[in-house]
Length: 50
Length: 139
Image (cartoon, rainbow over all chains, first blue to last red; front, side):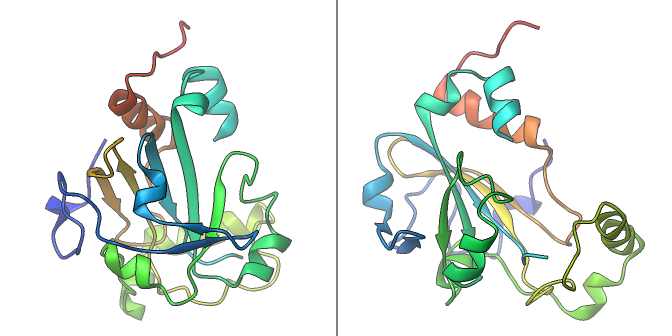
């Protein structure tokens, strides 16, 4: 699979822990990096909805 | 993507988590939760886009949206009935796909450079399976 060029320009870097962030699920509960630990995670950042 | 995961990587649904992040408001996401594969993904809203920034996902200038590949992408989407109410709230915001390992470290990153630039779902799941050690189904 082709990776985006060299992971440059981003805050998160390959091989490093992700910095703190907070996401909100549709039921209002929160997701943090701490809450994701213990299982691998696929994070898909969407573009706009049509 | 759920069908691909179930068919090709049956262990993945138990061994990994799937999060879909959108900058759209929660109400808009609820209205389209079926399309967003909400049964597979934990759908999250990030209206401030702070997480997009954390993961290095930019808004691109208009000229990045005018390439032949992008125009073909939107024409195809329109012909398939996927564009019903215009092209959306912010066509400039790019998406991306990331895999975090069990310890919360980033182990895979794919940042889209244009709207049509997305990884193939099967390849993406294969990458995830590689990181969690999930088996691939026998074909």
